[in-house]
Image (cartoon, rainbow, N blue to C red; front, side):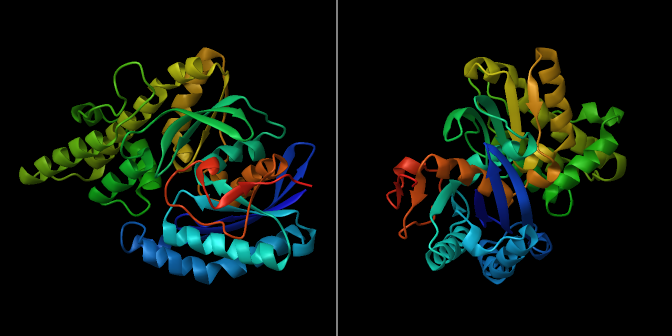
Length: 356
């Protein structure tokens, strides 16, 4: 089976061809047209600019993905596209292209949840991986635990109540003068300050909510960090050099420690002994190391996609779409994009059809 995946939920235009044989998925191509340099000027993603860039990039990106895979449109079994959640203008570019492509080549179209697709990167990482398992999706828009019961059944058992970890990294990274995207730069800078004695001088609240839950709240941490930085500036203190690295280490530590502190309880809640960590923040070296230590202590298996599959990409979309297609999930020509994180069954633009 050959599935074309299309991703355009934020600032990456991506297309991929994924092959499935006997339940094992493999990416034959995975092309990503990044907009990082475009948005760096503004310190973050500008939705209108992102949409226009998707329009310019999507045709050559899909063509390149097909060429690199050595696959013709006729050979495809279906087209999978991110339909939700994300920036609505950006999503519409991918959805409308996918609908046109599917109509032109008489192929089924599969709507894919972007968040679930991040988890599906694990299927490309560990050939033959099968649910059930625990998934932690950590990105710019989400920080959530899922009990993955089957290839198509996800149950959220915990998550952030406001901002996400990736957004917290990017926003404070910008405040301390790091280039966009702030998350990757913060991780590198934190490495320089991990051993600094000044690290302990930065007292920051934990984003992990107290009590019997698997939830987070990152807005308070961002506010505390901003107040700390503004207080230093008002006193004429400069946050640079070793001191800035120490702050980055303390801030990164607060986020990572909060996330991994919930992992043991998430294992108990799901009843699983395998953990997948996915999403853009899954590339953070501090998170990867801390999660590995927690899983080793518990004797649990940890699955970390390679960094190339942590960010937004179409291979994960095609992988998720493969299993949805096999389960009979397809969309019609009235498929639409949705900015919110709605469930497939709640979308009146989608329908379940038997795959013949």
